[in-house]
Amino acid sequence: MFDSVLVANRGEIAWRVIRTARRMGIRTVAVYSHADADLPYVREADEAVHIGPAPPAHSYLDAAAILDAARKTGALAVHPGYGFLAESADFARQVVAAGLIWVGPDPAAIEQMGDKIRARNLMERAGVPVSPGSREPASDVTAALAEAGRVGYPVMVKAAAGGGGIGMGVAQDQAGLRSAFETARSRAERFFGSPEILIERYVERAHHVEVQILGLADGRVLALGERDCSVQRRHQKVAEESPAPGVPAELRQRMLAAAVLAGQAVGYRGAGTVECLVDADTGSFVFLEMNTRLQVEHPVTELVTGIDLVEQQFLIAAGEPPSFDAAAVRPSGHALELRVYAEDPIRFLPRPGTITEWEEPAGEGVRVDAGYQAGNTVTPFYDPLLAKLCVHGADRDQALARARQAVAAFRIVGLKTNLAFHADLLASTEFVSGSYDTSLVSKLRPT
Amino acid sequence: MAEVRAEMVANVWKVVAAEGDHVDDGDTLVILESMKMEIPVLAEGPGVVTKLHVAEGDVIQEGDLIAIIS
Image 1 (cartoon, rainbow over the protein chains, first blue to last red):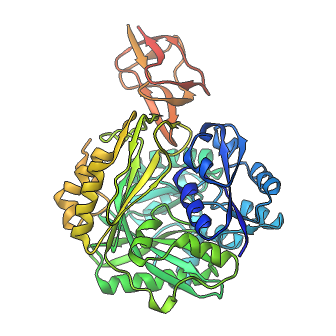
Image 2: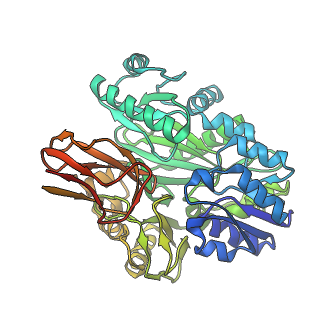
């Protein structure tokens, strides 16, 4: 095992990675922008290096500055967290070229999965179901219209190189497609540096279910259960749970098997996530995309399996076997994650500000992965995630009850948060029933 | 005369309207960016943009004046 790691990220995920590294006796190096100098993860690391001003392009996306920090501190490995450079094959290659260990999959696997069109084509060949959609990018609006005509409306329009729901839009007809295409293309160029657009059939009442996979150092690919991520606003997740309540056992087995095939198709190593859309009416599922990194909502899987996924990432990157018996993984109980965002709980608009009081809930089955504490300023430069409130219970009812108590006990003063939304979610008949889909948030918050 | 003020801390990503422009209710004046989200700031009634107080790249605070529409 390497004895030191640089965490090329910020906020809650940097702190979370540092915690496991410390437990394993690995020295940790944090990097931070000017805006983040006071955040807890900077203090929790053994060493911290200032890498630039607040805008991500000049700090957390600056590969040269990060590699320089690794060189200066003698860090032997780089953990990218999620977002920023985590899915940059180019950065992964630079890390390896600098003689460091990349805590992630092979850069070729990142590249194959990073392009959503290429990934779909690859999955189709590997025998993983995909929805009707583009086999090559729609280069202009005429091509998009032709493609949508072939696929059939409604269609989803998205950036082939994209993520995080940015630029994604649904079109019900040709007029809608024209406008969605223009929006998607301008966002795609601006956020992802590529104008390539993917058109695929939109599933109206879908469950968004994903499978956690782990590619071991010996080449085996494991599926460690699924997570339901259907609670979304603006195509971004707000709450996740495992097991997925609307997925019958037989469908779950088929999805897990397909996720293993997906991982094997790219020789996947490390932690990854295969995202699928499940059509609740027909019991069928299609591949959506694969995230070649640790997922934001990974704690849900950790809580039901008892496996520390960051620990496995480190072991796999070092070429070592996992810390658990792959043949004896038995998920137990039920887990939920609620993303606590700095945003108003009604319209979900960003609300940066200064935190004057911060009191986390505690108790049996409660885990908080926080990025902030009292006194910190939440700036407009990064995503609004303040903390992940996670709970585990013997069954879904107990997990829901613990979640309600924890939400009520979480006290954040000084800025607006979406905690009030989570209280509403946990009280809603539809969420409590377990038979909800991606339209749930728009029903709870009609505009 | 209507003052258009910022609802939140944000960066000014794009200035869409110019001083002297006639705008209608719902027209986009500027587009802010905060926490990886683009937030259009709209005119709340018809009028002429008599003053624009922000430029692209500015960081503005909650309550800051963005534009005056007369």
